[in-house]
Length: 382
Ligand SMILES: *Cc1c(COP(=O)(O)O)cnc(C)c1O
Ligand code: SF4
Image (cartoon, rainbow, N blue to C red; front, side, top):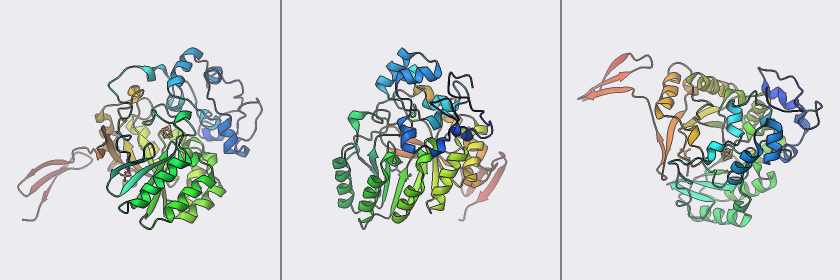
């Protein structure tokens, strides 16, 4: 660890960096971060240019310029996973002046604001389900975030009035059977506020399933506590999709968080974003997907990085994503293979991208290719 971190005097167990959440972060003494409330972990986050510069040796002025545009929050748990400058954890959380570069990317690449019948909270793109943004705060502000335009911005906080308007929209639209709570991160709401929303949703007859999109199990696993789990299980069927991007995010703490959720009866899936320098490597991705299965998390999506303004330096070519999928399918458990999708710019929704397994279709003869590139013939019925 060649990061300037005066208080980091614990010995990091390389195989289990999560063990390092027991390091003292602010006082130079070993304390158990586990015993600090998640609220305190959040409160002690690095958010100002001065704090970040002090911990990292980065240039204050440069950070200031970046976070004026896109806020930073690096909580002490996530920070403790950094092993060295520019490693996959660092790249995800540390402000970088590349975020201010001009590019061909868009402020709102998925056109969410225009497909929003209730401004700022509901995106209704598909016939039977809606995205419901209930909180614009996160446990850590990912530098590659698609909603960079609004997360963490105190002027864009979501009010209870807006949430009520969103609930009313869902009540008024009986075609909606699936609600995806997102943000920001819904699990940054106080448990009691989240419960109010879930209770309202459950009182709507046509709502079949409720999903929660949250990065908390990965970035602030201490937030997953017994109180939260006991509350959530009253509102089943609840599904959670979390967001791990690198094997080194799978720690004792994040494993425990995921397993607590699964033990609560919540199926937990994972969405990964393909990111240059973080996970644009078939071996790393395979390790990540297999690692998730070990903590009972099912890989759901790998996203091609959106064309989001301020994140151009994270984008990879499509061929990289295809290579990742090609290296998974057949070579490891089918359970470890997520859908590789591009969320179409402009709001077209998620479009699956697959390696070319169908070689040709001529008459009733279909030539298909297996994972080892061997060809097989399938004859269709007349
Ligand atoms: C991703 C997304 C969904 C959910 O898509 P699934 O493929 O059902 O997981 C719904 N609405 C919006 C706007 C989305 O971006
Ligand atoms: S947790 Fe999700 S919404 Fe929040 S900054 Fe990261 S990617 Fe964006």
